Image (cartoon, rainbow, N blue to C red):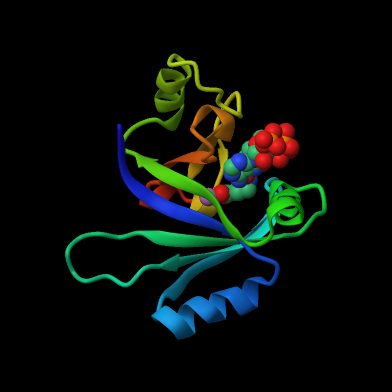
Length: 147
Ligand code: CMX
Ligand code: CO
């Protein structure tokens, strides 16, 4: 089941300046920063302010590290802005993706890849999702995180 909005992915030219914008303007805190070579990005996770109601959502800011990365291509075509929405799964992300593929939606990876903070991720083609690049995320268990 898809149980939450895990994060919204936003493409930016300058990661540090964009992190600073979200910190200064909204008071969001950076909880994680990493380079993901496979995805061709330097990225930061910012936690949206927590009102104590149990809701935890993040903003993922993505800066390209290679000209042929999906984020570089997106910036060249569309400029900065919302790049994808990521839903969290409560179970195995591959099983979730297989079920969705059965509805005729293209899943972009044959098997899940490594996402932020050791999560397992895959993507659904935007053309099959009414224009929205959609990521599925299975969070790493606390003991399993790979950095
Ligand atoms: N949102 C909506 N539509 C998008 C899109 C996006 N982010 N990226 C591309 N498209 C559209 C294009 O505009 C194009 O539409 P038209 O045919 O109408 O012009 C169509 O999709 C296909 O475009 P394309 O040039 O053939 O495909 P790309 O080479 O741009 O690849 C995609 C698109 C989704 C397959 C590729 O970006 C991908 O594999 N993404 C998954 C990985 C990823 O995005 N990684 C970065 C984030 C990492 C993370 O979240 O951790
Ligand atoms: Co993402």
